[in-house]
Image (cartoon, rainbow, N blue to C red; front, side):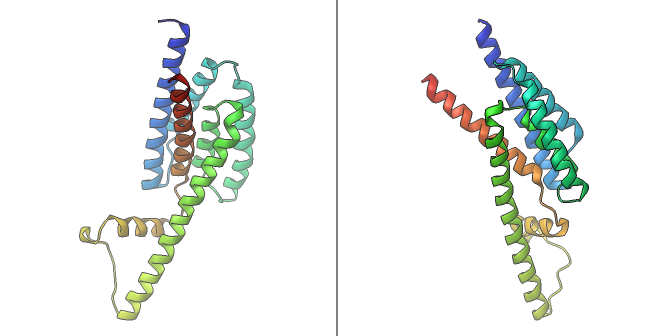
Length: 190
């Protein structure tokens, strides 16, 4: 097995590890609205490894863009417009892709985030409508029983927390870029 094959395998392993870390971060963010720092560091490490394995070495450009995004989104986090963990995770995933794919990556994250926010708004509206109907009927709902289903529990969980788990959007946008590249690579090799 020659050098290019080892580089390809190592890059694939790094992508697999980083996507796994992003998935775990998305699940934790969804459940607790927190993105653990060790998962962000895992993605940063994988991103650095991928950039060092990929010719031409583009680590400097990715670091500059990641720093600019960290600074810009950090200002929004300071104003409580976005979570600090989300900011760190977005900056970290910038290291995973070549410089030419940074804009599509950020666009993909924004699109998934917009869809997620739309789901949140629909769930919020449905919950408000349900509460008004229950109040008009004189029904008081204090907790959700298992029989009521996971969808209602999900919408109630979204409403109670009043924040959007943007780690889910970061995972979705990054996974879409990875999947697109994988399909492109498979098509080119066949």
